Length: 125
Image: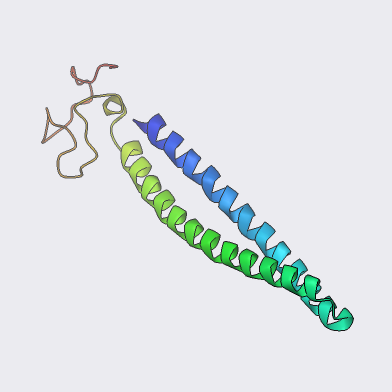
């Protein structure tokens, strides 16, 4: 269960890094298109203005969408960190046990009050 949670968290982290890189690239494109718009006013070529305006708007939208997705992924990463922390604070024998749960009030379905150190139910399933 711990390895599964860590694997899912790792995938989320990689996805978040991808969106973070997308924000950075979009910001560079935004600045470049802004430079093209400034160049338009010195040269007065309308095709550059249309192109740079389109690039400016699309990269601005990409920054907003990507940063919003990054914030959502941050919340999911925090939730996975909490789950992993709960699993890590269980007794070592309970990690692979099918009766172990993530609930604080009922950590074990077979031994609800006290989890013995040498539990016969915690076999490697």
